[in-house]
Amino acid sequence: MSSSRFLLVEKDTARAESISACLQRNDSLVLRAGSLAEAKEALSIEQFDLILISSAAEAAGIARELSPIAKGLPSPVPVVVYGECEKRLCDAVVSAFLSPGELPRELDRIYKSRPGDPDRAASQLPEFDRDAFHEQMAGDSDLMKEIIAIFFEESASQLKSLENALQFQEFPKASRLAHSLKGSLGSLHAAQARYWAQALETAAASGDSSRCGKYLSALEESISSLQPRLREVLPG
Image (cartoon, rainbow, N blue to C red; front, top):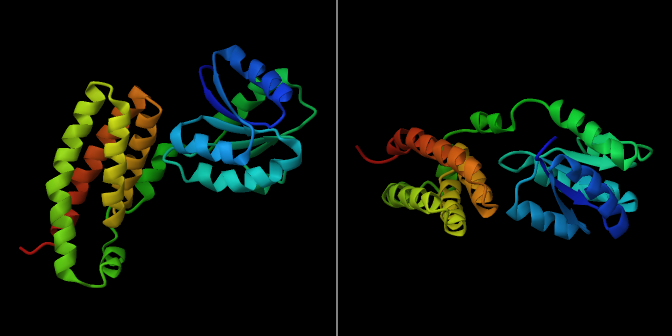
């Protein structure tokens, strides 16, 4: 996995340095987290290709907490435990008898064998769950129409502002705008477009310009596809 981004969860500084040195030989970036809390914080602001947990005594507990978070990300991240752990708690287990020097090759094998393209998850999400939206609005048709009308009014300018922010690499601003859109789309129960807004928010927060461009295009396409579904709720 050359030029990959790893999140290494290991509280022992010397062991973390040893593992990091081996992973970085392929020009990969390794961010180290010494605790579960630090790992959660890292996942909230950056994107990774793989999470490696090597804190022996706490590996199972950390894997149990991190795996659902990693799977719920816009681009799900495989969780690998280097040591002892039940396989049901993570995506793969690497024997503790494997030397750190052998890790890059084994992680590359695990990464390449993961099922499918994680971005395909978006296509399995509903564009608009009208029943859930109706239930959330307590059946108030006037309120539903108002929320949708506000979305139509604001989303166009938000997308334009997003384009401008990314054009000038104003990533913190782009991340905030994507976060705002994500909230609006969540209120509408528009899961597919919300997925891409969250993906864009995360990519912008980490300054990943290539993924930002990809996710912005997907978000714009999803919102365009969503609009006719929303208009069905509005008066003719």
